[in-house]
Length: 171
Image (cartoon, rainbow, N blue to C red; front, side, top):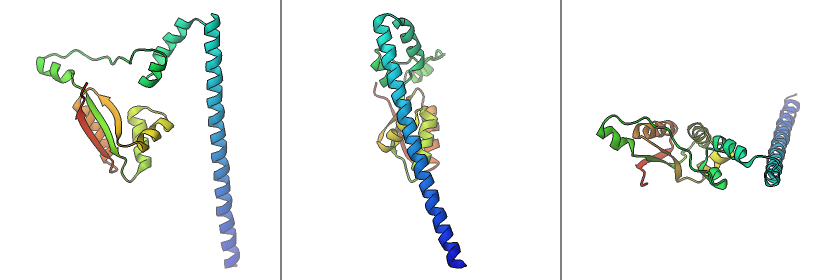
């Protein structure tokens, strides 16, 4: 009976692996289909704008409110997103107010999954963009407007052993 049980457990593990493989293939196919739909819809919208069937100004105003990544905004010749700031009340606050800090992911540490989740949480990036960012370390994670915010982000990464550098931005 022991051998039979072992055989069944082995078969169960094999079936679980097959199921997982099929689910992964289905998810990949769905992502490909979703991407293709977006490309086709974008092509249709661009053609309709060229023919005057869609108001280009309306589309660009919607894109201006929708796109947040600078690379995406550049594709459509949109200006960078403006961060609304409150006015400084003293000259020392004014000097600190004008500074920005770079948060640099030097190494994701031993837990790549936690690094990926934290990058997504901190940057609001999608899964693929966050994965690419984590795998390209060392890399600029983001720029922030004050050192306290940069240190808070660094603290989140240090909890699982990632290496983060905070430095004053050069621009």
